[in-house]
Amino acid sequence: MGISVLMSIYQKEKTEYFQAAMESILAQTCPADEIVLIQDGPLTPELLDMIGKYQILLDDRRREQGLNRPRFVTYRFDENVQLGRALAKGVELCSNEYIARMDTDDIARTGRLEAQLHYMETHPQTAVVGGAIEEFNDEETERHIKHMPTGTENVRTYGRYRNPVNHMTVMMRKSAILDAGNYVHFPNLEDYHLWIRVLAKGYQLDNLEEVLVEARTNEDFYGKRGGKGYWKRYMELRKMQHELGITTFPQYLAACMVTTAMVASPNQLRKRFYRILRR
Image 1 (cartoon, rainbow, N blue to C red):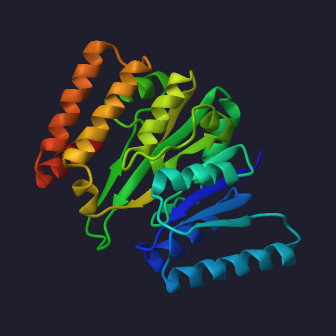
Image 2: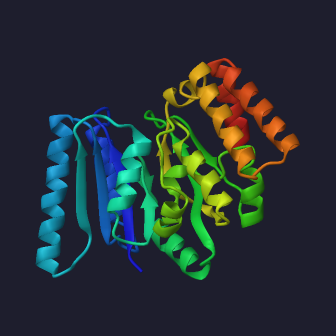
């Protein structure tokens, strides 16, 4: 069964980061059949030029080698619609059952798709499988591995309180994602929102132990996870989670308290909390 790689890009992305992400996809031991790139609003001339170069490169490669893959499919929104809406369109455009998410500033380990494809084919009851990430900053001054729980029951339990999979590592079944309602607009929590609905539909989620993606981080990551607006959305998510039967009432209250403590913390303290939890 074929694999589609789904990415969304917007104008603030750096060209060199996008290029590194694309090269990591093309270097996979198990090649993707299709790369679907959503252009979320107007892009810089440099990004458009790089996208055009990859379109030509992949078209030439397919023609010279007589292959049907990887197709490079692009779709452009005239205005920035944000990640949830962009990915919802991307899922609809993917022509394969297996969809691998990828951020345009991260680097996939060469065996990522092969490992996830093997897992999905041997675990037909699982709708989403992720893995660990190695986080690094632009200066390459520090690296941290963020491990995730493994085993479907452990992942489900973990998901009551925290996001159960690393979004940029997931491979998912298109049919299950559409059955759960696809991505929706829910800024900075669109993936967690989706996983809750996937679980509520009776599907399973899991994680591989190995590092699948090298993920770029910066101080903005922690700043986006604070503030009144973010807290209100998180409380909406917790309420939905409870109404769908994912949490009991005591678990719902505990999840709300943990979330409030994290979101209300000063940025530097929140950063420390996240670093501790990642270990």
